[in-house]
Image (cartoon, rainbow, N blue to C red; front, side, top):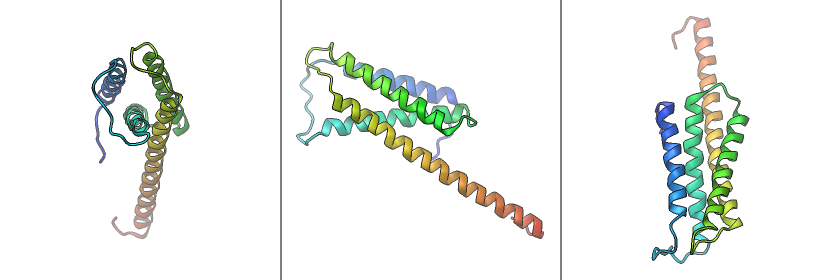
Length: 146
């Protein structure tokens, strides 16, 4: 699925998602209970920050396609790490919530997995597009239509 949205829409999605993570983290002790699966909260953290990384990658990709891939990766990982770290600090101030190093690690892990998948997909797309371009060039040289 390749969503072609304008950069401003991706930026708004990143902002809304980031704000919602802080709002949800600021909710104190509630009656909401997670399923009794070992480390289920860590899986939720990984999914949450994986989604944040995806939104940020799409925004950066839509904004400037000439930025080197490593800079996009660094900015995305740094942003997710800072948001996750600040979120854990916020939880230390909320009654009934506690910060956790494992949560922060799960945040970075989820972001790193999505970044890796996103970059591999981009690499595969570039290679397949390059192969199509080379095929088209060889067809033109031989007089055939692509």
